[in-house]
Length: 356
Image: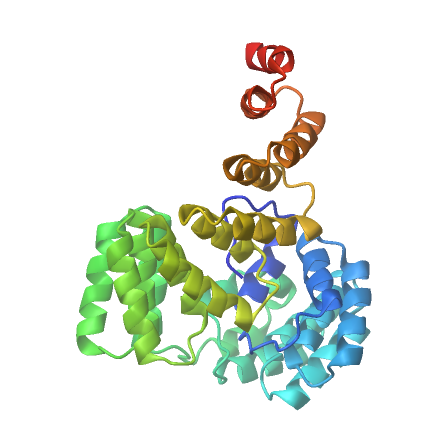
């Protein structure tokens, strides 16, 4: 899941990070309950998330990600028995896909042996996440002093390439971008077809604002790993920031086909459509997002601006009015509504707003 600048998140950090690291299969459904369930997850409403995802599972019981997401809702709602049942079902569909979640569930119950057993299985799997993320995961705080935990980490689980990616991210967190790029350059020289290394360098280029270089690296990563569908949204963002709006839309389309519940992409695709002056599509994408995150003031304002740009001033006023109802002291919203009133021949209201 890729978060945009307009997104307001109430999802607990650990859950958000781990869900974003899931291996996403292609979701054939744009099931309303699936979308709603994921939105509730992101907002931290775990009971309603589980209810919606249960309805989605009734329509499609062969997708492990549905069970993983419902299981995560159960886990964060402190219903570990149901969570373990869902994660076990996910593993039956796609072996190893939910090992990290089973480890977290058993650690929550204080079952150190089972937690470490599933952690070890996770570390042997293609779903393995970074060492730093595992060791800092608060779910494992209760078992980190155990002999089993220490024994687990006596073995080296990560390749040199994976360590290079982790080291680069360490430098990025300290804003040492050139050092991160240099480290990755050296690693790529020894492993030119490693998509993760190339994508890691692309991520640093994004941080530096070097969008052309980032897009080039993401293209190379996609060529090196045809299954690396998560790179489409990231390349799309690089295209968006460099003004290549048509290319950005194409990549965002591919990303949303993989997971239509990656809600932030709707806002990014709307921005790309706006760059092409395709206001109707821009409005449509923001409205999809607002259907699930209707209190996001920035997204409401963007929707109003797209309506304004399209010449639909009455609908623009509707969204700016919502902004001002929620935030009556925001000068930006008065300016937006004021300029809109000017285009509806209501100068009195326009002057009042602009004077604010």
